[in-house]
Image 1: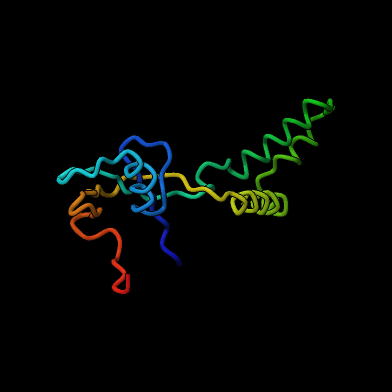
Image 2 (image 1 turned 90 degrees about the vertical axis):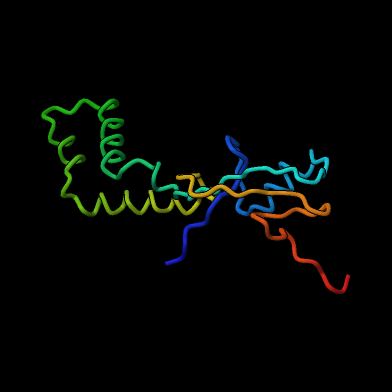
Length: 141
């Protein structure tokens, strides 16, 4: 199983990035005066997938049954009971597959828990992340 990606951003930011260098390039460098000793704290967060905010298959089942019931008058309630049976594995499996398909269409990530803080500093005009150079120097340049 692959590790869940992490997101990075300035404290309180609404837009987070999948790499700390993207925070520097997008949110710090454009406004940077490159003074020595300046530092910025960025946060690292775990992520959660779209299935954490999709409704449950039982909720979808009830919602569809209620939508149908609003348009039709069920004489004795048997049709409504049939649509909301929790042991109807075929129906619940189909709803589960639909929810899984929606989840695969979601291409963004949502931050979950803050797990670390990192510090970006400037030394010699170059950015450092937690004391290490953010970018590798090309020896041929």
